[in-house]
Length: 218
Image (tube, rainbow, N blue to C red):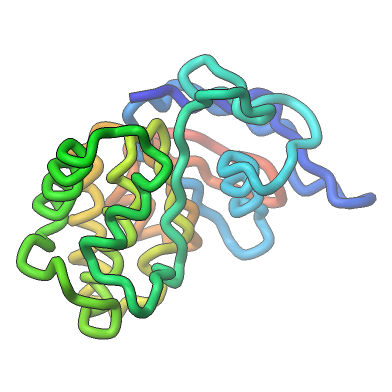
């Protein structure tokens, strides 16, 4: 587990100030959800944590280490995207293995780790299936597994349930919470769905106009 800390986080695009002094702490091992309407810049927070966007001011720390200016062996961060992106000709087993390509882990240990992640996600019976052979829920599990196979500090979810039907969204909310409890890393979800926030989060940050209006539990 690793504490994610946002300290007076600012972001500006030209003359437009997107984020205004975002502060957050006490997230170690928690499922944190940023919820708000379109245009509240909750996704900007996600991109700053994930790394593609550079911060304008303030800081981001994971486990007490600066990730806004990454150093060698910085804490590992992974993102599960809305479209559950997967290589169309890649099997479940190989998709899980992608996350370990740069690892120096011995091959036997890699295979053990892949098997553990497949079991957690109930995918042990489908190791040779490709994305088109899987349901939407199964594709989400594979996307989670591809991220989880690494030794993560923080896992970020970018509206991963929005493309699912209502019944499957309810099921996957429960599954995502269960996976979070098993894996014990810090999770961050950005969403416009208050139901997802209320049912999944340990801590909720309510966003509006680039500011956190309130932080608390459901």
